[in-house]
Length: 169
Image (cartoon, rainbow, N blue to C red; front, side, top):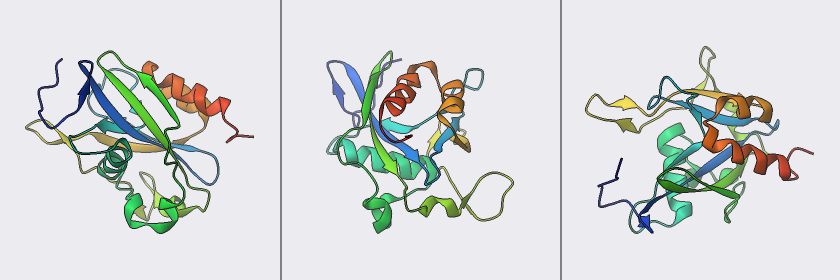
């Protein structure tokens, strides 16, 4: 499907997308269950299409805020906890994805609760289509092994990059 939104950036006829891998103080990774492909393995890292006049890191921060409610620009501790250089990248059928790392080693995100728990919630403010279906329906902290089983096959290279890093040693 061709992206016809004039606000989105394309390079070599491919959509450019950016986002964040979110790692907790305890070494787990936050993923979201997308509503776009309900029949498939539908968990994903937080990412989306770059808009004109945005840098890749700005796109990544905006998408993280829209898809999870995590606003790194409003939290000084989180601002100091993310990479400013890309952590990894991968290609999908119609787009190229660049991911940064938010390594929450101070535990700022520990106060967020998952479904069924009390406390602050991760929240999606980005919607699909005329019915305004939230792009992300649920959130999960997971190990790398769980992440590998849950994410789209195109995102398994993210797990490989995380395993190859020194983060989990």
